[in-house]
Image (tube, rainbow, N blue to C red; front, side, top):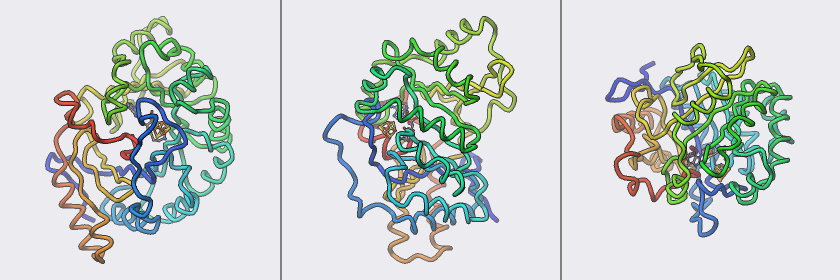
Length: 331
Ligand code: SAM
Ligand code: SF4
């Protein structure tokens, strides 16, 4: 098999798939409260088309897929889709990012169908603050979803907290204790200037170095980098206590992770997005719907990977990413 290697010698092994741009929440840093311009549902790839694209990627060496959104659990048929993906021989690691609002009832079936692990957004443990950030979220439903994922045996369950000064930064320590008590991983995330909403979110920006300083103070000791803590992703991990809990800090605005970038993103309507922080994308739907065979589709994918940029442009000109929404990119 010839692998997908980009012009900077990075091998692409990870595909993030946004199955829908719709969401049952409206986190203020991700979506505007009103006037969200949804893609037409008829424009979305069908799950059969997505399965074909993902199969092609696995035949090109991608072995890790994350389903995201919008909120992946609001798209009808998601469970059958997961089952179809699990049958792909090349796929070793199938995961999902979710707000967990609908997870309590679905965690067991999802795990049985092949979702090995989940990342769950949890920005606050205070119902009022949680509602303020998500605009209409139900903290209790989310906490039940987290417990259900743990009970179903998903491993690891990773909690993602976008840390915002003056909003939830007072909960950095409480969130750590909450994750620790459940054996969940926790990642603190800086706000990213993606979309109008995301640029608004940067008003509350709190840099990773400050988050780390707070953790150090809370632990009363130097933070120890976790074993294997660098990984291919953007988070830097630290071991907390004796247990399996690791704490990661994702600093989007620094470029340190671009050198190891091993991922591309597929939007719900079939655009392949080569970098979260740049505009360039290639439509795979055009090829799929014009009847290209597998080899021709693989050639389209390879040509797209040849366009993957060296690094994102978050620091250069936020207006360039203002038009996009995190919800169509999948985070
Ligand atoms: N709905 C699912 C969820 O919330 O986990 C999956 C999609 S969501 C777009 C994926 C991740 O992106 C979430 O952890 C969310 O907090 C993060 N996110 C969205 N907008 C962001 C922004 N402007 N800055 C940083 N993280 C953001
Ligand atoms: Fe929905 Fe996730 Fe965006 Fe929040 S971060 S609005 S849950 S897609």
